[in-house]
Image 1 (cartoon, rainbow, N blue to C red):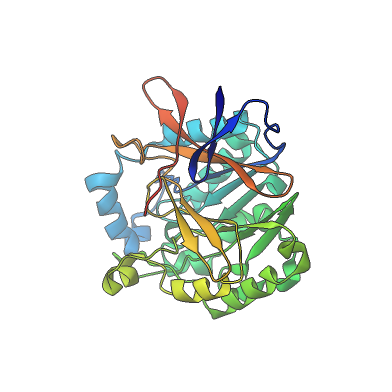
Image 2: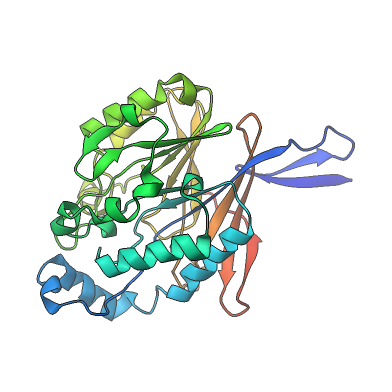
Length: 330
């Protein structure tokens, strides 16, 4: 008789009577792209910029795809799962309005209900939708408790604040980066920048990080489209520089959102392989089960080795979640 255990590379089998499954020490739940919309009381003058094209896009196709009830269901299910750490990889808001940030803050505090030390949040392009939202530091002001770092002296001063942020948790080092920068209308690309990448190299070389499994979190995926033009429009423009910095890593996770698709793929480094994992949108209503709202759940043993991977997919008809695999992309 065989027992089956799901891992990052699929299903492995272990004969009963063999050594027991490794003790699960840490459970991490990433989710992303909440796209919370709140327009009540917003002056029309706030749309005399990039928000105008964003609002048109919402009215034409996005408004009915991203549903607030799905986001609340995801947050509450993550809370019920009693995970050790939550990672939210950006696009919390739609138009970077104060009302939207306030709504997300309430959702994180009330529906998710975890202390800030158990949550890592990084921004997405929608959270810096305009230059004014960056100048006002809305993301940083609303989520300051979640941006505290265990290695603050190693961070870099960038326009949004001090990044990367580091949270040392058991056998894991959660490292949150900002790839969000204001862009012109119809452009959603991201960039880490030289200062942040240099800070990331310092962090990865730190002894407290080196003895842990790194979990790197940012909004934009490191896998760019084949087209250079498409990369400049929606990709991570300095992905090659990030690849150089993480070259010494032998293992770990690289979490992202942005694509609204549940996926994982191996990302080779000079020293080994990372698992690059994309989360779907936590608010997305979609007929494709790999895009339907939900979250991923990763379990690590005491050595920081990844033991189990599962996708929790929302079923809006039943109002519940079912457990599935995270599909692997080549």
